[in-house]
Length: 398
Image (tube, rainbow, N blue to C red):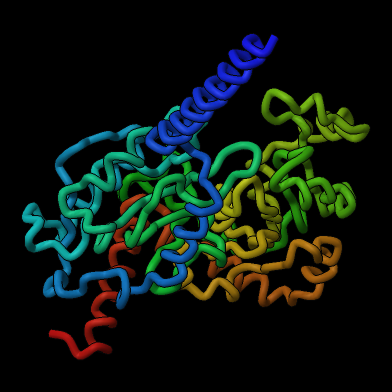
């Protein structure tokens, strides 16, 4: 009996030791896995610390910028999206482009980091392991990371799922929490079919867009999101819908599991939603409501500017595109998410003359900065160039 108990205890201890070794091995392997998208609390603290500290003074080698030149890595080339291919193409045609890395002020990877949603077909899994190995990386100093999508269902974390270190992030859906003023750049969200350059832009009749009354006062048509990020505001929009001059349409149909969360309003909402055309509403509205979605940024923002529909934004904390050079307060109406029920009363207080000016300014901003990918990239480059030149002057550098 004692012998049996002895062997039982011996094998029990041995089993616990083996389990511990396997468990620790799995942890180590998971940390080495380049496809890992979850970020531990300790990593988040490190990233947050880096974010808070970064500025041109602390995270940038200004000595490399005697001349403002941009170098694009030749290898490794991992392009998944047409947009990133076009971005690099535009930059290579720029007067600031150089083939010589020794003359470069800024460095851009040929690895596509635009889409860092692990569930996306355009997600480049290898970016996390390859970018730190770039020849001139130097902890990201003087490097630029472009990103349009980060985070995934259900939480849609804003953080890019790899350590960008000291790199400048040019990113859509930037929140005030993670945006480093005078270091990062808030980038607009746009569709793949955006015009490449101005010659491809279809010019609209400005007079018809900026003058005269519109059929609708305020409109919205989009996904409701029955649960999770972005659902809080959109689930309440029906309270403002008067079915006359305020038309706010939502559909519950989104993703594969929407029926699991279906509520009693869904059937009627879905039918009502299909009665209106999105573009007809957009072109026939004085104000276009833009509530946040899963992420802070939304395609509707540029779509509304394009047709002179005054943006009414409900997206707390979103740093708007190119806010460093654009005073958005003159062109849009920004309302806090918790003031949703006051939106229509706020808008009806705005004088007609001011509305006309806002419509004109919306069109002007769209055509000057956002109507083509070339304009967007040129604007981004100019913001960086002027920022660096200003820093050199303030610090008495040649």
